[in-house]
Length: 343
Image 1 (tube, rainbow, N blue to C red):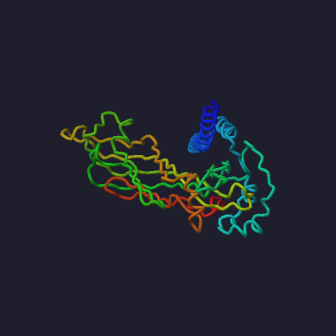
Image 2: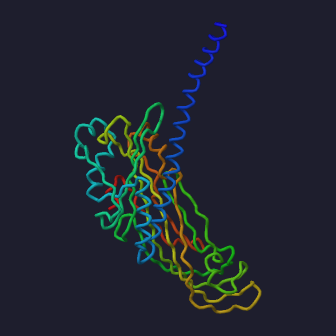
Image 3: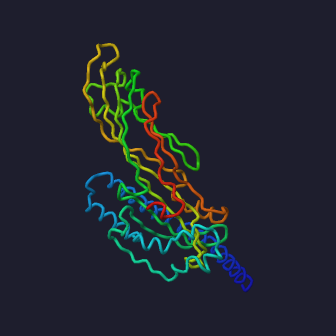
């Protein structure tokens, strides 16, 4: 009987030890899953927030509604003075000893109070949130993200312009592309899905078909590009914010393109007579450009441990083209090296 009891106790002890690692592993996975869901909600709200600024006037009630939701998720809106104090340029230098001793002493002990009012910057919105106990290669890290979005055309994160391009070749509505764009980033070039003449004009052009022939004159393009920048600061969980390093900078861009097409003549199915069509303004289209590692916490942790400087996954160039492969405009969005480059 005593032997049976001993065997039962031994099994119980072994089982108790085998459960502990599984529980810890599940806890880490749960933390990552919760953080990922939270971040997805935060970034979706920031996308909704940014799109409001393409419209004039901005819907303030909708803006406040979004900001309140962001605030409830732990996002803190900062004044420009708070950004300057908490995220000085020195934190973009990977010298942890210097950071701890001199450069960032001004930020020590500073409490950030959540605030859903308009920040003091006249051109950008600044906001911050952070994650604790992010596990990477046997250590735990604290990750803080600083987000900048433009609220004014005067911001370094806002580009706009207009150009009229003349065309001479006949178009096939379902084949000829009215808008194409190619984006350059650290990961290389990315071609977005082109918008054909038919896709661009069918909603406002009665009788247009994919097989229609079009004899064009010119197209006036107007564009606005707004950039969202994410600055990710990393430190060991056991350290203070004096030891933060700006390990990763990423950007994404949304470009609104409006166009007026001046058509000399067209025929509906390619076999009939040419018919003159008047000037035409089509609906606005949006081009979305997002690098693969935009706002990536894992990329920031990797950079903190493997890169001697700040790593970029940011957009450096957007080229918009029209029919006949004619370039409409090359846009150079802000490619920041530290936060105040965006002001």
